[in-house]
Image 1: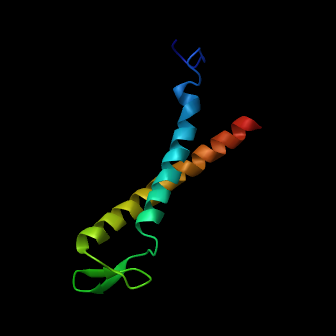
Image 2: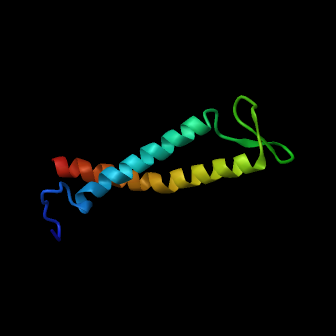
Length: 91
């Protein structure tokens, strides 16, 4: 099947995309909450970073945290738009 017609396989990619975007956003956020439960990480010495409970992290761990945080902030607006699209479809 081609186009936006739904066949025996189920939803088309265009209809499935908002669900995938929302799943990505929630999964990425959940990964960060599990990995960095006491975020944010902030400098607390030379090449040492601390969370809210003063647990220490290396520079590499801090860079990983910043990567997670950046991807979260960049992808979250797409999740908001996807949620809006799904809400409009149901009306």
